[in-house]
Structure formats: structure tokens, C-alpha cells
Length: 168
Image (cartoon, rainbow, N blue to C red; front, side):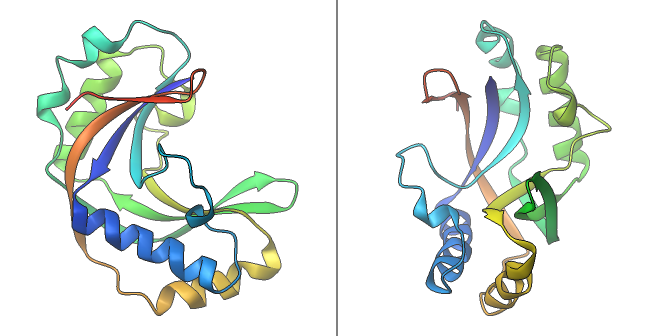
């Protein structure tokens, strides 16, 4: 699987990492515990199974949104009684147009990232049990949340090789 991801400016990256740290400090599952070099806050815009999309994606990278606005917290069912905790990203006109352009360039996108089915979010925790959701939300309530963050770049994640390629 490959994915196209928007990365954040230094202030936005630090804000999301502060959420990760707050959960880790509270003894809760957090992406702060994932120390791979590729682990950084990002917004997945599209995911697809095939190779060769990079040339088509180069035509849209310049149209990326310049900022993202955070919404509230959201939980996704991860199966086996676990949840993913994330902050929603509000879809404005720039993000909607970029998302649509990406999916026109990569028409074989995974269903959950397609226009009309996508729930844009910034992941904070994985494998959270129902009993710990309240503690996680309490820990996050203590950390300031910026209303908007800047978009610094675009990267391509290759899940097969576990590599990242910066596109912009």
C-alpha cells in the first residue's frame, strides 16, 4: 500500500507531538512510543495499492493547502476491542479541491480515502481500550490545541518498503 500525506510545519508538528507526549506521560498508548524515522504527524490524503502514481501526483503537489484546521477528537474502531484516537481535520475548500485532484491523479484509491468516504484526521493513539478512552481525553484536555497549523510538505509513504519520499 502507498499513501500520499501532508506534513506539518514545525509549530504544527510540535503541537501534535505534544499530544503524543501527554498520552505517553499518562501511561497511555501513544504514537510517541513509535520511534521509526518515518513517524511524524501527517494527514493521509489518499492510499492505493499500485506503484507508478508518482508522475501523476507531481501534477497536483503545488496545489496543496497551505494550512489545516483541527476539529474535535474522534474514535475509530480498530477491532478486537481497541480504538484509534485522532483529531479531525476540517475540510475547507482548499483541502477538498486538493483531495479531489489527488484522487483524479490516482483513480485506484482505497475506498476509505475516496471523496465522500474520507474522514481526514491526525492520529494520536492506536490500540486504546474502551476503559482508557476517558483518561486519554482528559490528558489531551490539558494540552493546548492550535486552531490551525501550516502544511510544510507532501510525502509518499511506501508500506512495502517502509520508506518515505518527499514530493514537495
